[in-house]
Image (cartoon, rainbow, N blue to C red):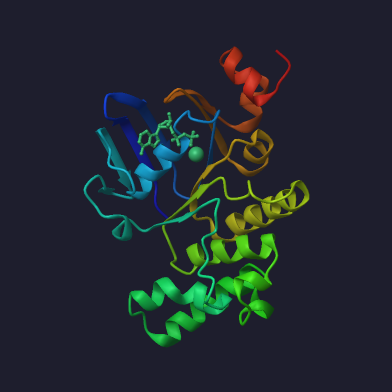
Amino acid sequence: MASVVIKDVRKAFGQVEVIKGVSLDIAEGEFVALVGPSGCGKSTLLRMIAGLEAVSDGEIRIGNRVVNDIEPKDRDVAMVFQSYALYPHMTVAENLSFALRLKKTARDKVDSRVDHAARMLGLSDLLQRLPRQLSGGQRQRVAMGRALVRNPQVFLFDEPLSNLDAKLRVQMRAEIKKLHQSLKVTTVYVTHDQMEAMTLADRVVVLQGGVIEQAGRPLDLYDRPANAFVAGFIGSPA
Ligand code: ADP
Ligand code: MG
């Protein structure tokens, strides 16, 4: 597990600054949810932690390394997206092992990692199926499994459940919680669903217009919102 430290980070696309000086310390093993309205910068911040976007200013540390100049594949993070982007012509087992095979990981290590991830996610009986033979929830589990087999120091989730129906979302939420409780991998979880954030996270960070409005434990945000925006967003009675 690694801590993630974000220090005075800014991001501009051309002349437009979309992350305007964000600082956040995420402890080893902590589960932090990033919430806020569409366009507030959640994905951009997450992508900078992953290394998929360069930082315009400031610093990001993962563990004891400054990672600003480190490539995504060397950051020890794994990201799960909203669109699962499974390889349609590969079985579940092949989808799970793909990244490890690319890295020329030893065969028995690949097998044991895939086996472990499949068991954790209830995919053991589905390993020979193709993605089109799976339900939406099962596909999302495979996407999570692909992140899991890489044994990352940090999990990054970008609205992983927003393509699922309401019932399945609640069910998957419980699975993600269970997974975090057993693995304790540091997690940054982007969602626009405040209930999802409140039930999953140790700490919720509310973003608006590229700045942090408030960061705190779910109940503290609910009981003591810092301002009307947070109150409205979290849905507590103003
Ligand atoms: P969120 O995930 O909270 O909905 P994003 O991080 O995707 O928000 O986007 C934040 C802002 O940055 C938005 O105004 C968006 O249009 C802009 N943006 C994101 N990516 C790019 C890009 N590659 N080029 C230009 N503008 C971008
Ligand atoms: Mg987004």
